[in-house]
Amino acid sequence: MSGTPIPAGVTPGQLGRLLACSLDLWGIDGQSRTGCGHAVRVDLAAGGRFALLPAAPDEQPVRWWILWLEPGSSVDDADVRQRAVRRKPCASVSGVLRTLRETLGVASQARARVGVSPT
Image (cartoon, rainbow, N blue to C red; front, side, top):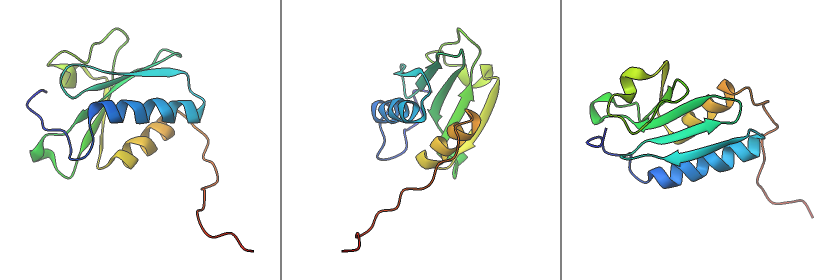
C-alpha cells in the first residue's frame, strides 16, 4: 500500500476533508480519518465502514478503489485489499463521490447552475 503512488493533485488529507464535508452536506453522520500510507477510512455512525485507496499505476484507468470493510477492520494493515467485503473501482474523485452518494442512498438533488443573473 505504501508503494502505491497517490493520484496527482490529491493528498489523503484533502480527500479525507472532502469526504467529511460531503457526508455533512448529505446529512450522513460519519467521520473520515487518514491511516498510515495513502488510505482514507470513513466510519459511519450507522455502523458502516469503508476505505479509499489509490489504485496502482498498472490498474489505470482506475484511480481509486472504494473498499467496504468489516466493523473493526483497520486500513493500516497491508492486506486491507484482500479483507474488503466489497470493492468498487473509480476513475476520478467525482466518481468516488457519485458512487458513495448512490451507495449511501442520498437522494439526488437538483443540480446547481452557475451563471450570470438576468438584470
